[in-house]
Amino acid sequence: MALVAGMRVGSRVLFRPWAWLPGAALGRKESAARGRVGARGFGSQRVLVEPDPAAGIAVMKLKSPPVNSLSLELLTEFVISLEKLENDKTFRGIILTSDCPGVFSAGLDLMEMCGKNPAHYAEYWKAVQELWLRLYLSNLVLIAAINGACPAGGCLISLTCDYRVLADNPKYVIGLNETLLGIVAPFWFKDTLVNTIGHRTSERALQLGILFPPAEALQVGMVDKVVPEDQVQSTALSVMAQWLSIPDHARQLTKNMMRKATADRLVKQRDSDIQNFVGFISRDSIQKSLQVYLGKLRQKKG
Ligand SMILES: CCCCCCC/C=C/C(=O)SCCNC(=O)CCNC(=O)[C@H](O)C(C)(C)COP(=O)(O)OP(=O)(O)OC[C@H]1O[C@@H](n2cnc3c(N)ncnc32)[C@H](O)[C@@H]1OP(=O)(O)O
Image (tube, rainbow, N blue to C red):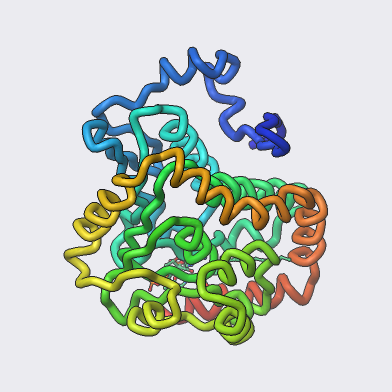
């Protein structure tokens, strides 16, 4: 799938993964009107959206079994659903969760980063950047209801949210474990973590690739609340009510003030970040590390 069409938003040029969809040529107003979400659920194969227009919120469930690894398809569908909700004034908040039992998201899809050509790596990385930028700068209140393991790219997604509720299950670890795979989290992954848990804790967590179990995740500030598994959703809803009690314009401007500089660092160097990724991931030594890691994941079963 070619992801090349661009759209300027402020100083950002965003790619439009949906540009190939029917209706993409419509004006923004017309397409927003046609695409109004309403009370019925919508979504795509891999992203379920359960809207509650009366409450002004939607629950977005990642549904890409077995582990919600962030394939190009999942990234694309995620951005499209997000865009749809952002464009519909009915919605002020999203609860982001998983439809895959025991896993929030296994992070970036290793199959997208193994044995492919440089053009594919570039397209993939651009889609990863795009999702991060859209989530990180979203005007909506985003609450992560983390109902499963949350490593690497899965953790990154949760860190873009305004609040994280984690189910209390020792298997539901969370963290940026890239070093364990022999790869390096890029600067904007690192910045997102530093902005959440501080420099020293991030330095240790990133170098050691720590996957924190719930109590420790709470202690270092990686998540904001740990609750019994059957209370994750209800807790996310009550946290959402609190966040929505704040006037949108004041909250949005404050969020932007806190996050814009971090996002701008990537916006200013998107192309070089892509080139850096392509060069790194194409190295034989990195491909070998990823293959070894994939082999271990598969062996774990047998
Ligand atoms: C300059 C730039 C440098 C590059 C920066 C790159 C940044 C990278 C960020 C990332 O996100 S890399 C991905 C890191 N992810 C992980 O380390 C998680 C790996 N997965 C797991 O630990 C476990 O799968 C789980 C999430 C804890 C779930 O465990 P569970 O026992 O429920 O399932 P499994 O049997 O392990 O897995 C089922 C099935 O899924 C495959 N799989 C798992 N994770 C991934 C993945 N990230 N990508 C692709 N495929 C994945 C796993 O191999 C199994 O496959 P089969 O054996 O059934 O074929």
